[in-house]
Amino acid sequence: MAADPKHGQGTHRPELSVAKNLFFGEIVEENLFPYPELRAKDREVLGMMVESIDDFLKPREKAFREYDTNAHQPDEYVQALRDMGLFGLIIPEEHGGLGLSNGGYARVLAQTSSHDSSTSLTIGAHSSIGMKGVLLFGTDAQKAQYLPRLASGELIAAFCLTESGSGSDAASIRTKAVKNPDGSWTLSGEKIWITNGGIAGLFTVFAKTEGADGKMSAFIVEAGWPGVSHGPHEDKMGIRASSTTTVAFSDVRVPAENLLGEEGKGFKVAMSILNNGRTGLGGGAVGGMKQLIALSTAQAKDRKQFGRPIADFGLVREKIAQMTVDCFAAEAAVWMVAHYIDSGMDDYSVEAAMSKVFASDAIQRAAHEALQIAAGNGFMKEYPYERQTRDSRILSIFEGTNEILRLYVALSGLKDVGTQLGGLKHAVSDIFSDPIKGFGVLSGYASRRLSQRTGFGTDKIISQLSPTLRKAAEVYEKSVVELANASDAVLKKYGKGIADQQYALKRLGDVGIDLFVGLCALSRAASLETSDKKNGAQASRLAWLFAKQARRRIVRNLRQLEKNDDATMDEVAGFMLEEGRYPWDVI
Image (cartoon, rainbow, N blue to C red; front, top):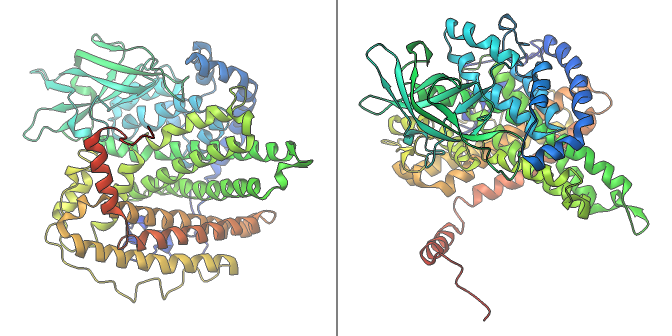
């Protein structure tokens, strides 16, 4: 994706993070406006691919129900995905792939997800995380050896990080790699919940390597090597047809040349892969929401109650409208983050986390409401609603739980608000290592007062906005200064104890998410007002609706930093944890 330079809003600034600067009370206008567009090359490829994907997947709707029931994608179906080139989406053309940008890739995942989430997961786990390490950190020799076979689907890839007892706590992994005298490695351990585990020919594996601080390294491991095995297919709640297994490594000899990235830098490799891959998950969520909206509008118009279509009833209309607001906002944020990745932003990790949290929460709300509109039909396996409800549930767990990511957003935003940040800076970089105790401390906090001359409470963003969008912009101009003041106050109040204040961090994180997502929606609506004469005005209404809703949430979250029920909630939790059961009964 690339922004149109002829907008007069200043030069794109890759060194500045939009999300982090929100906590300073600053809106980095240059990195938000104008809204980016897909590359011409991507548009050309996608124009052909989207129709082909629909032609291929739409007739298989009944088959997808069978795959879900049987918890298996037939070999011939996976082969058909290979034949369509869906395993080479982001691999450069010189290695046999299609060379799509992250924005183009997310658009493909949106299309496949409108038909079947398990299909998107098989493709996405391969591209977003399975082989992304080779693409980002591989040597020229590693790329030449593996990328052509990954592009063709001869090798399907999987990402092996999670272990029993070390989900978000990545640093506690027990899988080990011991260096041999000849430079090779002996790898031993077991990974759990590995997507594509049963069909992968190549694994990106993370293991502890010897060192004073027990650092982690990444390795490229082939499934056919002696000592590599996988367990049976996991029986899952959703995305049932996709392959999920344990993967075991028993004294596997890994050649020296299959070390991925630098020795001891595996944590950086893992986090870079996860951050870079979140547009696939977000794109899939958007595609699923679009399908749910289409199903719901058709259901609302076709189903009659009391002699009228249920589309006439306010509570049904409210659900459809809210699904649309959420989808518009999620789509705006997901493709903005894809643009940040494609345009070479120095740091987009917080924006990626924000878009993932919002999009994954939004599709679960949409699935719930779509099923409700379908009523009894929605509960029946004959219809797609219940499967989409089950499938979407994993998205707030995948690639960092939304709880962890909310804390990550807040701590990342706060870490630059103080002037002495050694402990907290280290903690934020290690957030996935120990998400509770390992956040670290804010060492020697010294207050940072806002500079009112740079606060956007007085300066207007995008003066050319239409009246509707100008009102929305004023919401964000006001709210961003309030976030900065609240961040300043929270750091003063808690000092080095800020890392343990998860209730407060969640609220600050949610405010930041609402601001970033809302600004993306504002930017996209501003673009559509001029480029989409038919629907541009409706896009502006969606952006204004989101701004008003976001404002109510922001006010509530900021107020509850001071006045809340946190202590009482904590006491109730302590009582229940001690009891271990619900102790009241009517008899």
